[in-house]
Amino acid sequence: MYRLAATVFLTLCLAGQQQEIPTFKTTTRLVVVDVFVRARNGKAIDNLKKEDFTLLENGKAQEIAVFEFQRIADETAQPAVLAAAPPSAPAPATAARANVINVQTAGKVQYQDKRLLVLFFDFSSMQPQEQIRAQQAALKFLAEQMTPSDMVSIMTLGGAVQVAQDFTSDRDRLTQVIKSFHIGEASELAIEADTGDPNSGEYTGAAFIADETEFNIFNTDRKLAGLESAVRMLAPLPEKKALIYFSAGIPKTGVENHSQIESTVNAAIRANVSFYPIDARGLVALAPGGDASKAAPRGSSVFTGQAIATQKQKFNDQQETLFTLADDTGGKALLDSNDLTLGIQQAHEDLGSYYVLGYYDNSPVADGKFRRVQVDVPKQYQAQLDYRNGYFAAKEFNKSTSTDKERQLQEALLLGDPVTDLPLALEINYFRLVGD
Image 1: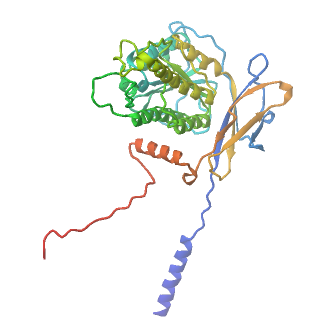
Image 2: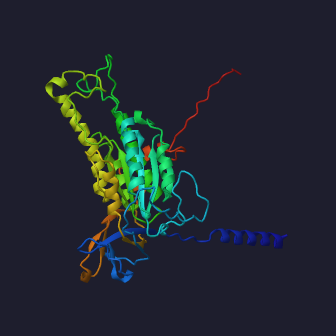
């Protein structure tokens, strides 16, 4: 009996020791930097080796773990009817999934020597006439300006971000997708809600004017969050990407939307995506008090000049957001131009041959601070380098500010299956229904 008890005790001790196996965890993040190296004449220098580059983060030398050269051919665009059949996109290792950007291996170059362009149509910010103008500009680019080195993807934002077409060089397929757009979709979201100001807005004859400023803030954050979702889909591809953003401007309400703008820009920088916003309204002449599509303004603002001043301020704010997205990510905005294809051409010209450098960040600190990146080559090349000058590190939730936490909560609520860290306290009260 004692021998049996001793055996059982020894077995339990050994089992307890097996469960206490120590586990060591480490986290590494691949940081990718796309570097354009050009000579004085503007042409790309294509004979550099990995040893020619010096890569620093916050002044500390980094070992280059990924080195690729993307040779983008300088080709002349031809009309679609005369162009030779473009090379097909490389077949993925697994079956392609719908409504996503298919990636074979994260961090590995998938489209060698290709120019990656994303045509992003924000239907929630454009009226039907502006959607038609953006559609025609994209079709013109595909028919007359697309080259065999171009890989184009199509995304839309209506009720949610949709990948209408993954990266492909099939011009006919891209044209078919763009022609299938439902003009007028989500255009009701492009209208700003009333702010309750009795001296601004349209006169509707209503006795009560509701203040829907919170809806305007939410609607703007929603557009910016859609751009952030798009660049996160593109992040696993280390290649340089240009996102051509068709929009009629993004309004803002004071400083309420700054947190989401910063989040969108930071996500784009980490994903090596440059925004090229195009104002689909073209060249606009603002009529005092609004054009014939709007009702008369209420109050006396049309007589004092406040109406046109407010109207101009809103227009400038919408374009300023587009300019900020472009300037902070290394792109260019096309504003006040009726030829929308000029914006696509600018993105096309900027994406020349470049080097892909990558290093692993082993720092366990997730404080969200800016980390400066420096790249250099020997002075004998007399080269001009163009690359992102840094990125914001990941941030733990307990180090987030109140504004960051509010934005994260809003993003979580927009998910189909929301996941939050909100603690819930429940209390159940008992009531006697039948006397005993």
